[in-house]
Image 1 (tube, rainbow, N blue to C red):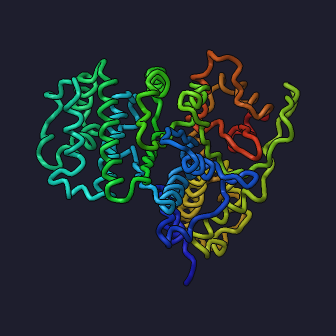
Image 2 (cartoon, rainbow, N blue to C red):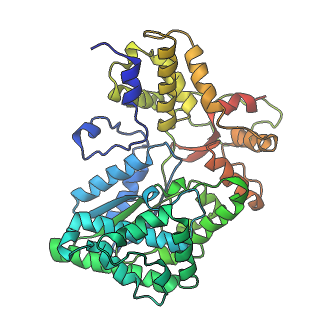
Image 3 (cartoon, one colour):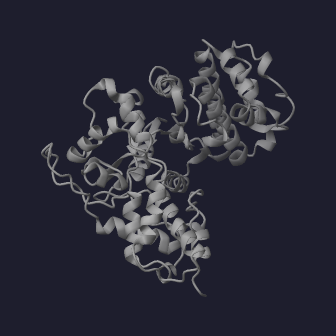
Amino acid sequence: MTATFEALFRSLDFERPLDVETPSDRALYVDGMHTSEGISPVDELRVGIEMSDRPGTWLFTGHRGVGKSTELRRMAADLREQGYMVIVADMGEYLNLVEPVKTETLLLTLVAALADGADEFLGGNRLGPGGYAKRLWKYLTHTNVEWTEVSVQADAGNAAKLSLKAQLKDNPTFRDKVVEALQGSIAPLATQVRDFAQSVLNDLHAQRGADKQIVLILDSLERLRVTGTDAQVCYDAISRTFDQNADYLKLEHIHVVYSVPPYLPFLLPRIGSYFGVSVCTLPHVKVFQTPEGTALRPADGPIPRARPDARGLDLMVQAVCKRYPQVLDLLPRPLLEELALASSGSVRDYFRLVRSVCTKARVASQTGPLQGNRWAIMAQQVLRNEMPLATEDKSWLRNVRRTHGNGLDSMAHLHQLARLFDSGVILNYRNGRDWCDVHYLLQDELGE
């Protein structure tokens, strides 16, 4: 079959995480993309769950596009093989991720996700109309909270599920009424959420055996965005939820894995201690060589570009080759490697760059293999334009480039650091140790 740019473009679906329990997806998975010295952060998280003598609360983070959702689903598959009941919930289906998150709504959406997973795993239809969602509503209305204004259609079959899942995400009026009703009532709500989790665990034990455990993985919370003039309010709301209200997020009877924004550990440096765990960080694919030492370069000296790492580049190219084995008939390997560098190790952005080259080649009526570096330059410009640099940020970012730390010079500047991480300007890598760098497409400008 003749290779085409259209077929290559369609093969690179960066919106859908791989489900490694499906043979066709497992064939696309690249082993070892995030492994450092033989240790995968996600495998370390999984082993922590397996070794724990009681259910715990776990934190997982990383920039969008590095492969978190795929890795979480791989971990879920491994845990299921060990007999765990694992629920993976895309919290983008339950929460509006561009609004400040409140502990009340996070608890409600968390338990709604648990109810949905229990319906699927344990057969909610055996409970009658509404299944676990109907049971959940009964638990919630036994709090000391007045739910009259928010219980629209909650008793009509599956409407309980709809009122918590669909309305919390898409109905701001409903969401505001929920928060208003729960003001000052987080403690009783958390108690009922835990009681409901205990009831699901009891059902699991009755069906599958008393040694079985539940793992609830809340994916996509790392996409909680901080935008506009209310950025400070959003940062403070997220921090408050995982700081002051951290105890309410522990369900006690089941394991819960929260995928938190990559800037959260900087806003809350001791967040791991609040939950009694280390924050599991999934770094970018290491397409650059590990910097030599951590000594400061001279403040007035040139800052060279990061040096390519052959193994990391090969892993990125493999990710494309597995999806479209004929890719080298269209894009020569040097071009694929240059695009991998331009992505800075983000699989999502790498696929976007390759797709951008495909559209440009198709418009120009080109056939493969493409020649020259103009294709990479044109594709990179789109990604570069998504990262505007403020003058006040440049000195900070030059410091990151010199030290390969995060550049933080004062705790008063934590929110600025969070913004630079959130926007993908500062990225994290790992090879034996964690280190930072500035996005590859900004390095020439900062080296001036």
